[in-house]
Length: 104
Image 1 (cartoon, rainbow, N blue to C red):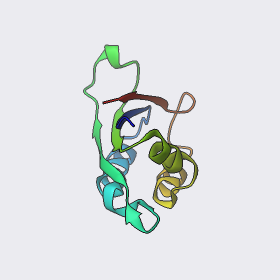
Image 2: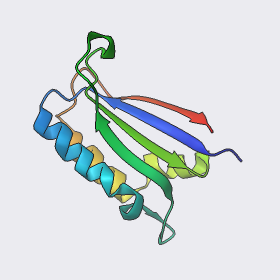
Image 3: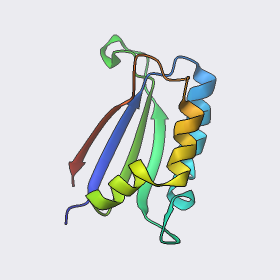
Image 4: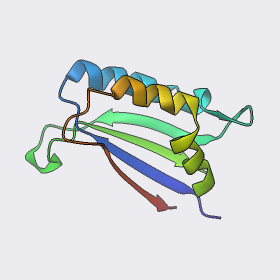
């Protein structure tokens, strides 16, 4: 089973909301639990530099998981991730975030 690295790119125009999202991601590794234990290997988020090449993306969240099954749990069942999604609802513009993931 391969470990998974996931990058999620957000278009959040308000810098205050970007900073608040970064704070929420900073504790995700301990807040997200599966079977009563933390399961996310690492989680962090950073703002992008202002540059026309970023196509309007202002925040990148990086999460890593031991398996694709853990990432699927994160997407569909994790309460801490659900809270982040609820917080960001209405703050992200131009459709849903761009999510890419890969084996590492």
